[in-house]
Structure formats: C-alpha cells, structure tokens
Image (tube, rainbow, N blue to C red; front, side, top):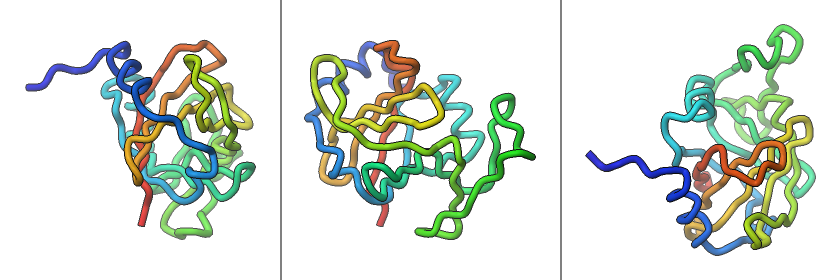
Length: 155
C-alpha cells in the first residue's frame, strides 16, 4: 500500500507546479482530492462536493454539489437553500460558495487564486497540465495549507 504524503510533501509538490492566470480557470471544473482523511476532505465527500464553476473573474461558484446539501453546524439549511446551476440542472450551488478570481501571491509566487466572498478562505491554484489544476486551500490568511485538491476541466 502506498504511503500517505504529508502536508509538507504535498506543499513541495504543489510549489513545483507552474502558476496560471485567473482567465485560464474560466469554465466548469470537476473536483478530486489530493489530501485524504482530513476533516475538510471528509466534510466535502459527505456533502457530495462536485466541483467549481468560474463564469467570470467576479462570478464564481466554489461549492457545487451533486445533490442538495447543507453544512451541518455551519448553516441552518432551512434558512439557506441551494440553487440549481444554469450550466447543469443536475448540480446545485451553495450561496456560501460565492467567490471571485484574482492573481494572488502565495509562497513567493503569484498565481490564480479564488477568494470566497463570505468565508475566510482562499484557494490557490497551480497547473498540473492543460486540463487539470491543483488547488491549495488556505484559511484566514494563515499561510499554511489545510487541504490540497485537484480540478479537472469538465466536458
């Protein structure tokens, strides 16, 4: 069985990847997980996180799910209901996932980043190849990664 990579090893791998411009993320992306077993991975898996939609630099849905969901303990789902995506009526977006794209510096390198509007979270991106990127989730400007994930351009 392969050994699980440490956050430090994942960070070094992420840092070795080339940066990308925010405009390169425009479109619909399916998610995958690089960090396994973390609290965030478990939460996102249990809520059927599907991916992200980048319409413009100022119109991003970061929390797109394969079925209606709520965040236990974070949101009273009776008050905030998810909306269907115009791009794919089978998917739903959660209002807390509203975000925008910016060029952002992390670890001394400027690359595309997604800044949540209502949560203290920034996702920093680097290119894996033409159709895939790797994201690093940072909370509250801590400068340390909480989760690594992949996005693959949806067809």
